[in-house]
Image 1 (cartoon, protein in one colour):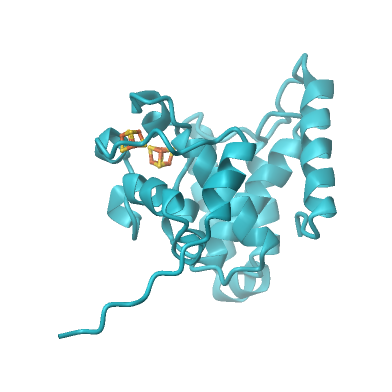
Image 2: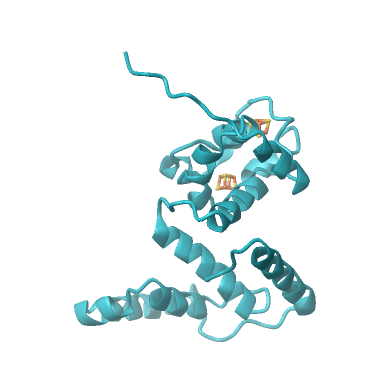
Length: 202
Ligand code: SF4
Ligand code: SF4
């Protein structure tokens, strides 16, 4: 019989979530969150398991799981939860906490995409300029030279042209949002918090 691992709970985790207005204590494991999530096929823990393990203070498991990076923040789970738990918000908080604590990332490429996405939204003043996202990601992922030599860049450009023809990709900058100042404040506030805790977008 396999030895059962000894669990070492961190009772700080549920308290920290509560301080971030993301309390998970009301969860009664109905699993409505997991049954509505469109991405469970790619997750190593189901959303309800992430919530349960967070409540049990299983920091290592929740900060090191693939699920928090696979989550696309679509908020289906949050909408379905009968107890008003912001599961999507918990996933985001766990992502940022994993980065701050330097936890080994299960899928570095996905993390890089997540950070590039946020940076593109910031550059776009709250909107997402798709061409900027694609360009930045190709550069930041270290794929530019590889793709250039292998011809992959030309395939990407050809795919981009087809997407553009079908109206799926815009090369122009998006219209300016009315609340651009508020968006800047949110990003600046988040960056200050990250700097205070010794992390920050790289
Ligand atoms: S839907 Fe809410 S209460 Fe139900 S398992 Fe998920 S987090 Fe818990
Ligand atoms: S926010 Fe994340 S966990 Fe929730 S339903 Fe969407 S992908 Fe799944």
